[in-house]
Length: 130
Image (cartoon, rainbow, N blue to C red; front, side, top):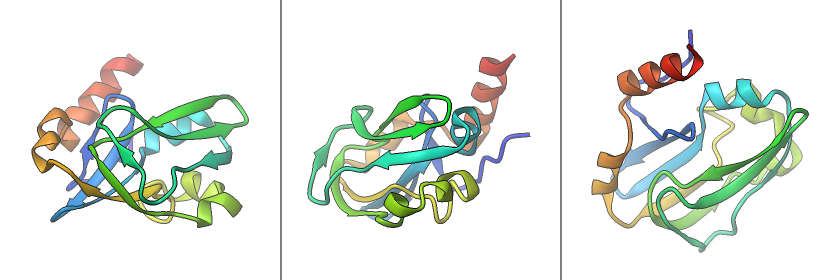
């Protein structure tokens, strides 16, 4: 069973976002990190970068593949998780905790309507696996 925490929103590309006022914290889901295997490198955007919803935000490399990570919301990156440069394995260990990628100031919170709630994401993952 996939670990899909409540209170977050999800993309079809397996990113998650936690919205707290205008601040959005984003990363990749448990499903994504399991699919990738051991993550060996992560390339994060610089703070201050503007990003658009569903456009490339970061990239990760694992023993299996390289993969792009997309922005769940449009906005400006305010903080990056610099720990991931030295310890990319945090993404595998704690994708919703220590393994977060960026914090951003969301431009338009209503974009969350383009994302999935936990129940819909669980169903999406089950159907794509089945």
